[in-house]
Amino acid sequence: MRTSALLAAAFVVLSACDPGGGGDDGSAQRVPVGAPRTEPGPVVGLVGTMTGPGAWRGDDAFEGADLGVNVLNRSLAPGREPYELVTLDDHGDSDRALALVERLAAEDATAGVVFAGPPEVLPLAEDALTQAGVPAILCYGDLPAAPLERSQPHLFQVSPPISWQAKHLADYILEDRGYETTGLLMERSPSGLEARSALQQALAGAGGRRAEWVGYSPGADNLPELLARLRRRRVEAMVVGGGPGLVERLEVALRRAGALYRSTEAARIRSRGNGRGRPGWRPQTLLFDLGLTPGVGLPPGTVAAEGLARGAHYLPLPGFRRWRSAFVDWWDAEPYGWELRAYQAVAMIGWASGRARPGADLAASLEAARGIRLGGMAASFGPRDHVSVERRTVGLWTIPRPGINVPERGRLPGAMPWVPLGRTFGFGGRVALPPGNARLLWKRRPNGTHRLRFGVGTLQADPVH
Picture 1 (cartoon, rainbow, N blue to C red):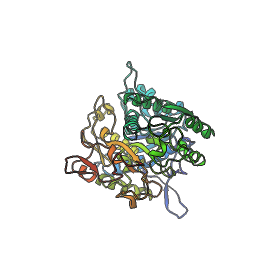
Picture 2 (picture 1 turned 135 degrees about the vertical axis):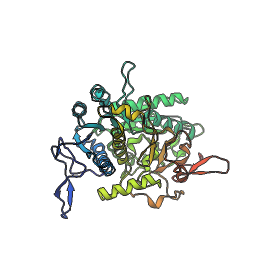
Picture 3 (picture 1 turned 135 degrees about the horizontal axis):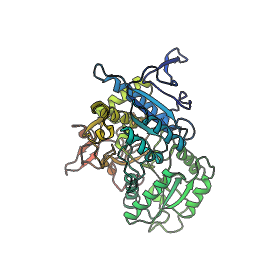
Picture 4 (picture 1 turned 90 degrees about the vertical axis):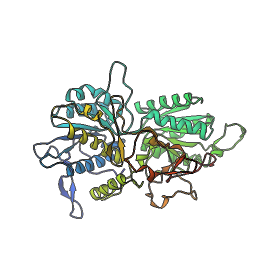
């Protein structure tokens, strides 16, 4: 989530490596330019939010996609034209984002679009993508469900669906921690409304009460007021539907209110046996994947729904190691994991365009992919499955408390203390890892069950996790 000073242009077009102006130390920098430098070969388009409050989306996606195009070009067969990365800033504006996707789709050279803008607009580009026969791949958020009369055959995503995340959060709230009341702090945006709907359905499906919810307008300064409303409703678990900007403000507001989470017992101000006079209000904070962000001082025990691929910055899978090494070589900086999504999206586009006949629909080619390697993970698609994430690789991540056994604690970046909460990740299902990689993450117990070798391995009795 390093904000790139290079990404301030309204429209930027980036070749995989453009040796532009020098840095302060005289080194060459990759500088976005206004048009392809040569007659373009195949183009990978990136539409993302590069400026404004949502700039983290485009910044991380740019870093991953730029590396992805470089790696793709190094693996091309002799005589193949290299790919170019065309990066367009939507400024967080939905109409602009849609126009940019349609503009890329109209270009004959475009092989596919990596999308890191407002997710709700992408389905509106389906007609243009269908006419061009190219896929668009969503990096952050969830694709809204298509109406019955409208399909989305050209839309894919590399993020875990919101409904899967909500199911994990609801199960943890009701079954693991046994909370009676849930609150939801959500951004007033289409993505926030989608998070609210998914959480309410998951809670109801698990036999729980509907969440008390409050809406936050990005940029507003009324978080203390919204938290006071949730406090009056005596919520024990507070789910947050928003990105890094909201989470950063939330941490400050909770700290000032003396409401940072300490333990499950302290959070249970309404649950049976705890009486009504328990002092203080310290709800446990739970996040959707967009809230799992570095550099935020939320307390130990905070959890977030995410896939195992979020640990690409440190987990020991060979594909993750190769990706980390390539990232450091390319950017001279350590990754935080999110950059992998755009890298995977580029790999998907490259796989489809490299195997399709001239003029073929590349989305149809991608639907035929089975077990392709995507930076440490494996993915398969089909006509009704356009998600690269395998469901059993999604669970909860947490910030571990001091003193608890976390095998990899010494190798975690200081700004990124998150680790998997082992008991929330399943083992098995269809292949989500390259052959032989599962044993690097899971250890078989004598009773035949499996547990993660990394992260927090405690049972439900853990007072914090």
